[in-house]
Image (cartoon, rainbow, N blue to C red; front, side):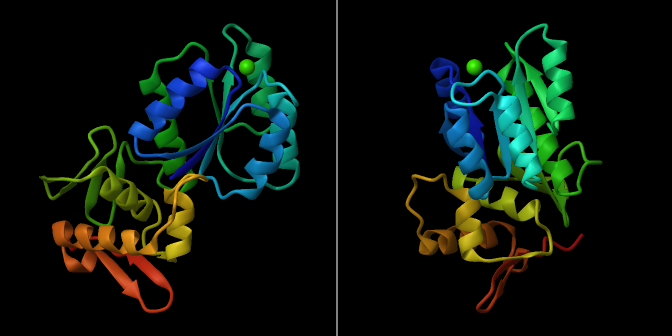
Length: 222
Ligand code: CA
């Protein structure tokens, strides 16, 4: 999953980018509200974390412009401590959730996971579950019928994307768009290697190849 972080306080942004990458997200970072209006609306983000106090353009205005333009991406806003007015304005402007600074990185991680599940119609699950597999996002491993299977970081990122899109045909370019940040090199051969490794661990049928179209997560028989 690919996230946009808009935060002008550099030490906090550095800390969040590092934590989010560790959690297997591709992250792009911006510090200016004007840049965010454009990039948030044009790049295919799965979720946006938006600070409200920004140079260039206030976060609230950024959010209003996104929603006014029809952008449906889940947005989590970061608000100042004690500012209930900010939280209310943010929710009215179309934020999906908020966190008040300072916050614990684990709380951010859990809120992101919940927002992504909700955005993909899986809101009723305490953890990500699709077609016979359960994904433990904090340990980055997968279980099948109680058996736990270890994953590399690349396998985890790929499987999470598949499990959030069960049954859908995903092209290689769509996968690359959502698994790599704006600065990473994209190599569809690498994707193929990771798909094959996932099949080796979970069974051939777990990910189908659709000739000329891409891949489809089919899960495992239960
Ligand atoms: Ca700020």
